[in-house]
Amino acid sequence: MHIHEYQAKTLFRQSNIKTPEAILIDNTADASSACDKLGGNIWVVKAQVHAGGRGKGGGVILCRSLEEVESACDKLLGSNLITPQTDAKGLPINQLLIEGGQNIERELYLGLLVDRQTQQITILASTEGGMDIEKVAAETPEKIIKFGIDPLGTLNEESCLSIASQLNLENDLANQFSTTLLGLYEIFTEKDVSLIEINPLITTAENNLIALDGKIDFDDNALYRHEDIVELRDVSQEDEKENEASEYQLNYISLDGTIGCMVNGAGLAMATMDLIEHHGGSPANFLDVGGGTTAQRVAKAFELIQTEVNVKGVLVNIFGGIVRCDLIAEGILQAIEKVGLNLPIVVRLEGTNAAAGLKLLDESSADIYTEADLTQAAIKIVELSK
Ligand code: ADP
Ligand code: MG
Image 1 (tube, rainbow, N blue to C red):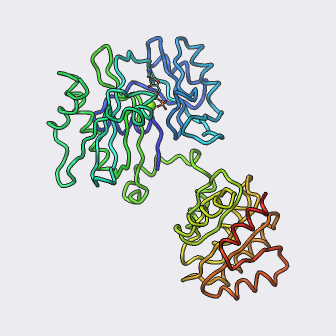
Image 2: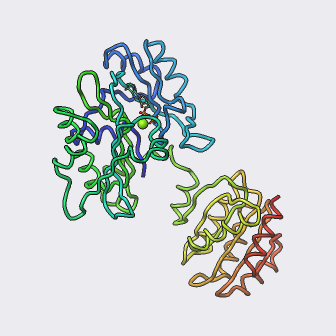
Image 3: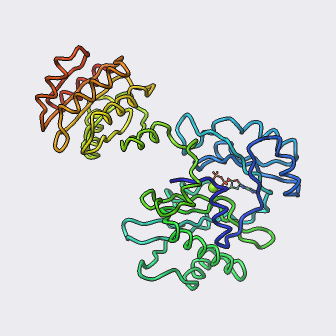
C-alpha cells in the first residue's frame, strides 16, 4: 500500500525526523490562511498523488507571492498529474501540501528497503539526492552507498555515524542524520514497511537536516496488524478495476494492450501473456482467477475485462485442475448473458471436464471460438482482435 507525502511526513515527525512546516489544503480558498500561518515569503505548492517524479511533471511549484500560490492551487486541484512514474492518464490531485520554501544547501538521498539478494533490510544513501536519483543509480552506481542491517541485530548509532561521514556530514549534521536514520529504521520495522525513502534529504543554510519529501510503501500482507496505516489508504489514487477485482479475490492488473486475458494461476497467466506477445498481440491485463474459482467469480472477471475500453478481444485460458472446466464455461455464459458479448472471444479449456466445458460453449448461441490448443488459441485471438 502506498501513502501520500504528507502522511509519510506525519509518521516521520512521530519518529523524530525533521520536516518543513506544512499545511494540507483541498481548496484554493484556504491557500491564503495557510500561507499566513506558515509565514515567510516563499512557498512550495505540492500535489499529493501516489507517484514520484512530481517535480518533473509540474506538480511541485515554487511561489513567491500569495497570487502565485493561488494560481498554482487553481491549476493543480481537480486536474490529473502525469509524471514519469504514472501512466498516460496520470493521477487525480485532490489535495495540496503548502510548505515553506527551504534554503537548500545540499540534496541527499536516504532510503531503506528489503534487499532480496542479501535478504537484509538495506540502507541506501547518496550525496547525489534530488530529482535525478534514478539516473545516478543507473549511470554512476558507485555513488550509492549500501549498508545491510544484520536481521538478528539492530541498527546502531555507530553505523549511522559512519554513513553520515561517507555523506560528508559532520558534527551536529551527523547527529541529526543518525536520529533521522534511526527514525526511518523504527518506522520500517514497526510498521512492516517494504520501502521508505527521503529524497531529497536536505541540509539547509541554518545547518538543519530536513526530510523535504517522503515515500513509504507498506507490505500488504501485514496490513491486518496496522489499523492506523490502513486508515491512511486513499482509493482515489488506486486503479478502480483492481480494487473491484480484489473484492472478488481476483488478482487483476490493468495493462496497456488490447487483448483481455482470463487465466487461472499466476504462472499460466504469465505464459499466456508471453504467448500473446510472441504472436504479435499485446495483453490488456493480467488476470488470475485463482485455483478454486466459481462461476460467479468468472462472470465478474469477464465483466471487468469487457468493460476495459482498450480491449479488442478476449482470451480465456483455463487449466482445470481443482477447478472444473464446465463450471468455467457456465460462468462465461452467465457473464455473456449479463453484460452481453461485443468482442471476439477465444476460449481454451484443458484438464478436468474440459470436453464438457467446450461442449457447453459450442452448443450455446453465443459467438465463441473454442480451442483445445493454447498456441492456436493465442494466434486466433491476435488475428481476431486486429
Ligand atoms: P518529487 O520527488 O515527487 O519530484 P519532491 O518533494 O522531491 O517531489 O520535490 C521536488 C524538488 O522540489 C525537490 O528535489 C526540491 O528541490 C524542491 N522542493 C520540494 N519541496 C521544497 C520546499 N519545501 N522548499 C524548497 N524546495 C522544495
Ligand atoms: Mg522527491
